[in-house]
Image: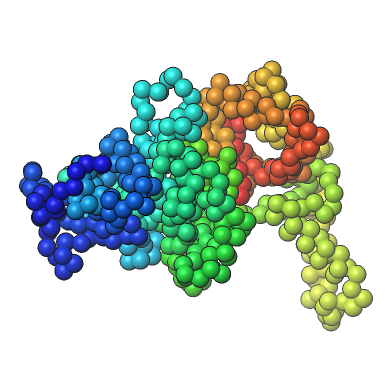
Length: 530
């Protein structure tokens, strides 16, 4: 540690109603000061313990870590480090002064963010996380894998929430978002196993934090997912209105670990339109943003973006319109013998995940029930007008019958349906490189596949990695349904997939609920339906 200096010898507090105090947390106080050395205004963070205390060795280590992190991080969206001191026997960091409002303050004023601002926050702060998780070891780039960088060299912020992101204006007058407070950050994963390190704002804690597991970059991704969710809806996925209540905390933990994330648009719509009976049928933000937020909030860290670099790349693709912007249609198709819809044999009760089948089943059961009624549903008195109507109906039926008999055969199954059926036949076999190369022939590259755009080589590598643990796949397709008003270019596919593991006689079961987009008889996009 450096030698202790006196505050008044080197700094001048900028007076306000709180004697220069501009922020206070559980471990420190922050003052607005003038540094006498260069006569500029900065923020001075002074920790609330004495370095001479024999019981603060761990706190001193955390302070030195924070200083080391801030020295190495250079990004427009990360608070800038100036210097560090020991002031009146207390550790202190001199930083860029960030004068603005936190996202938490803005949400209290505005209730929710507009889509443009949400995407701007996502772009800027994911860039800051990319720097934290990756770019702080440029000498390692190309020498070791990204995964090794993320796991061994990444700086984990570990306290991302709406109070630690500040909106300011830069020198050009543009809105800038700044990530602050690296007091809980770490590089060495084992250093995160103290009660201090797994703390943080509870609604933003990742599932692995609640379970006190080893933390890495993916914990930051989850917390930032909660930030984006909060900006869209005005609240965390699992709100807690009383941090002092142990019962509320247990409920929050259980929800974070077990409950599905509440639908974003349902909450956002209620915030925007209240109880209005007239509301838009489609969300006012792009589909890719919804998928991105939900992926950040996956309970399994392996299903999230693995780092700020991967997250930022996805956001940039969305901004450049390389990801699906339009939402899948929620309109129900009318199924007829001439429709471009194919149903397959399955168990009668297996309609989970397919809303069209549930509606059709309900309508069919309603029809059977009415046919079985002993009493007629309507009693009418026959008169000459009813006779006339009956004659007209008979003529109409005769005309329709003659028209139908002019058709020699039913329409052939569409080429796109054939392609999708063949695709799933190939997908069932795709376990090794040769079969995966065959599967690739169904795509027009670059192909948007679930989470990102792939080149042909990138897709094959991704697919090889995803099936490397399995010896066999079993696909069952229940239905292929054209999306209305898309000229048969989009189809929703429902079914089930089982993948049998190589090392054990077990298998994974996953629901197939995908929307395919085809162009010129090639698949150009596959999107997961949630």
